[in-house]
Amino acid sequence: QVHLVESGGGLVEAGGSLRLSCTASGSIFSFNFMGWYRQAPGKERELVARIPGGRNTTGYVDSVKGRFTISRDHAKNTVYLQMNSLKPEDTAVYYCNFKMWVGEREFDYWGQGTQVTVSS
Image 1 (spheres, rainbow, N blue to C red):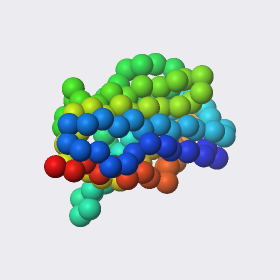
Image 2: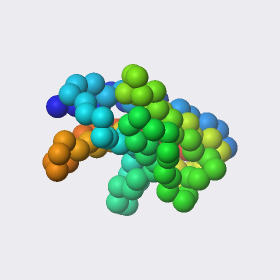
Image 3: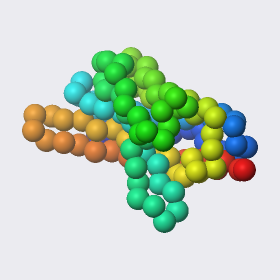
C-alpha cells in the first residue's frame, strides 16, 4: 500500500504561480512513475505531467509545456509541480498519482486532490 499526501494549490490571478507537492510513503518499488492529473468541472481527468522513479525524464501535456515543471526528490519520494504563467483554463482539481509495477502487476494510487483556481 502507498499513501500520498498533497499540499499546495489555492487561488491565484492569471499570470501567477503556484507549487504543488506530493509525498509518497509505504511499500514503494523502484519501477514507478509519479505524476499529476487534473480534472476540471464537466471534463475528464487528464494527465498533466509525470516523472519516473530514479530518472529525471519528464512528460507533459501540450497545454502546459513551457509553463509547468515537474521535478522529483527521489530520496524522499516527493514530486513537485511548479506552475507558472497560470491561465483560467488551468483551473481544476489536481491529483497526485503514483503508479508502480511489481512483476506484471500494476498498482495505481491517488492523492486526495487539491483545488487550483485561476481568476481572470
